[in-house]
Length: 271
Ligand SMILES: [Zn+2]
Image (cartoon, rainbow, N blue to C red; front, side, top):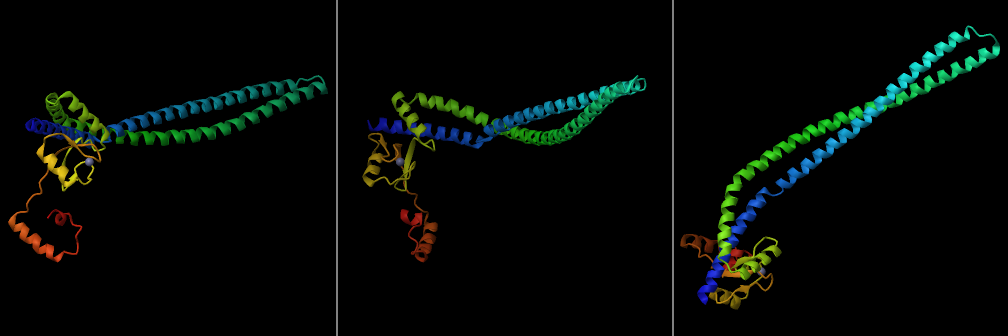
């Protein structure tokens, strides 16, 4: 019985160690996959912006050329009226043609004003396009670098990850389903991904709350599975405090005498 629980705990600790390594691989990759994704999205956004401004520029360009055509047409008509004016039969006819000429002149003025306005807008659009294109180039460089970085990290860790995944599969199979499910449930609720921990320095290795001496004794016995009463993590073992080697100990003691006024030092709490 004792042996079985001990074996279960050992298997869980090994699974935890594999999972922690896998977590670490993901942590190293970290935000990089997301950063790459964000940059790709941003780049698409910039491209859309360039396209939109370019379309607006085309419209302004059309407006300029339409107004230029309108001026040409007005000038043509003006010339025609001026010729007609030379052959008028009476004053009334002369004045009617003069009015037409004035109207054409007005049209030309309006068209010129529109050309000026559209040209000014067009200049601004062109500036915007060149600025946005510059931004696009810079962003593209950043993205390419991040992609390379991600590829390198992926290539580096892919092999380790595969190996760990295979090892994990084997380990997981050796643990009974109910216990495995509990492990997974505790793990998913734990912020640091730790479901199985040891007691270190009288505290739970997951949440760092104190584990009372009697509970520590029960954990050491390994007669049953014991969970931390604060965080619910499985407490697999109690890590013994390492005995400081003789040489070092002497030095520590010497130092300790000088530092008796600092009781918060963790080494002193241990001793
Ligand atoms: Zn705990």
